[in-house]
Image (cartoon, rainbow, N blue to C red):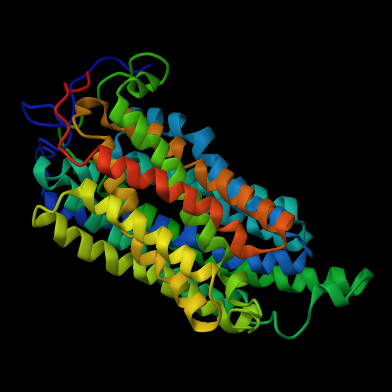
Length: 437
């Protein structure tokens, strides 16, 4: 437990009430926007890797979803240690630690590819995700602190637009690089040495992609290190109770943390299955390598929606009411997609990205109101809640295997959105409780 210190803020310790002392806030916001872009893009690459590994290792949907399970389990295991690390090192040095951990994860794709072993790929993804968690612990509270508290919702939503830009660019490019050869040879048609050689060769494609990411990450980490002392007067308060879990006694925060669990689970479930869903005969009936680029439409919708949502909240539209509205919209689109065919089924599912757009930043900001100097603790708890990205997709994959229908499996994400709609209505008014401390 760290020694008690005062929060990074001015005289009023509510979340976002002050700005970093001695720092040009716009410059620091650009840095945070870059972090959102990086960890969003790398996370979304899982949606491209899943159909690739599913084909290479002839996996069912439950087994394929272990990609997301291992990736998002890092949020459960690293969330609190990550928050403690950031409080010890500070935001800038913490970001460097996270970026370097991500680089190590990317480099682990080398032995995974050389051995063409599914388990090694899963371990590499876990290490990569551990770095993502640390970077996210830095980014979420920092962007909330850099400005006026009344615009925290808008500012975080705008930052998430950069996250969505990454989730649009990375899978769009990655689909061409990683899925390009799936239409030529199928692992199910091979056996023995031929199958081993095919898996090794195709795994090398994934390896080269992540080697490029590793090179980019070391450059970014170096740049951040050069500016490690730019943030002056940074202080954090000590955690009370067990690693800050006492914050769950605040009903609004606890409900919000649950909704982060459900939202990430729903978003990841749909994103992970989109390529396979679009390839179904009743939908587009095209190979995964042909429709893979369309995953970019899902994440592109989230990017556009976050810009629109940021503007609406800046104009004082109630964040809670807007959250409830888009959650209901996501449910409606799932119902339409599951009960239609062709382009209607395809594009209604892709349009859920637009509904998802404001959910994470809005839930985070609503749950974190008046956390004050406990902002880093709250971010750590919420990062643990992102473990929903491991649980809900695995359950959705199991339901798809059990029922033999991806459409029926979408019931689980729909239930998640229903609870989120309830939180939006519950948190439609500004929090009037005491500041955490």
